[in-house]
Image (cartoon, rainbow, N blue to C red; front, side, top):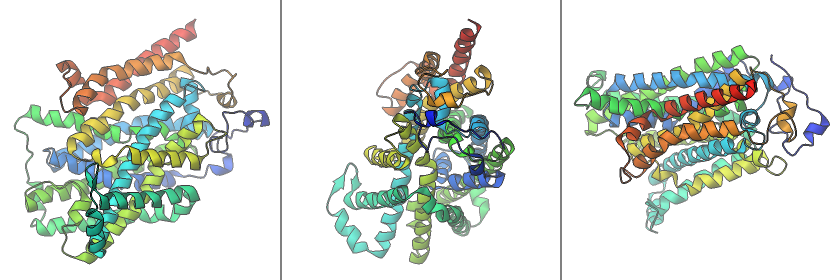
Length: 486
């Protein structure tokens, strides 16, 4: 077990401290490698994982190209995941407190808000997906009610019925936030098996309807040239890295409970790449089958389930998706923003209050617009936020491993007059320089080309996370070491 940190009463009285941000005590560090692996199984086995992989099929890849892309992306993101988890396990501190070392005790609010807003986006997406499942359930169980609600009109591109069930599912999520995350521990245990079961059900259906696996695996890619393939491959790889670029920042929110570095490293290695690749393969297999069966790639499992003939199968499957989505949403998309918003004012904003703020923002972003098409999901959402979070990950890793040599004064991370600056200017210089090259490409992608930018920036954007990470890392190390030498 790594260090148990005991803070003085003077530090606990600091405006930068509250119980949720305080270092974990030795008796709280109970997670073995299997607990860490189970966490990743629970977070990876979710509908967006299925949809990301299926979206690659819709974009033109065949089954093995999409599977390879998923595996490579997760193998790459595992590296910053394990590195940023180290401080959490060693010192028992969550992401907002770790960020104070690199960005300053006040400056840490900037990367925390960046991470929190992305989590709010994911919370909205998961809630929209869960609400769609509830809507689909009621379309079968109470078609008259759904028809009446839909007849009330439309709201920002969706029907009144879809919006009502989106809000109902949102409220279910928020109840668990208000009660406390301990109340859904049993859901987390059941959620992944539920969703895996639905995945195997879809695979069996695809196998039987497509006439076996042969037609599915023989389905060729849709690229006329090798260049056309790489034009899809590299953005998809970046999107796959971006998919977990969020957790690669705040992984210390969870690794702070691990017994040892060995447990967090092995647990993440066993839980992340294999689970993501396996469940993505289910999405790939089924979506490839829809090309054979329907002549089009259906990448949304909720829409696909509604094509089933058996009401019982549809009801059980959609209920399972609903349960699994609640569990994933709380673990992956509430823990981080709740802590991040709490970091703004620890004495005023508790975990529950921070979770409520995240929930409200999740409505305001209108998540259904992010899932309108493959381009919006991959090129605007996943790659777009990876351009922001890649530089943050680089600065955290460079600061902890190269500048501070894994040595942190934990007590001073909670002081405004300690050894850590209020605002660490080199970190913000590196952050700005790391983000800048990807801004033109993002504007071009977000406006579907209406904003014209030079070809160079369009070529850089598909590598947004990698470019931002490399530039920010080098700039921060250069400035940080220069300061040390002086």
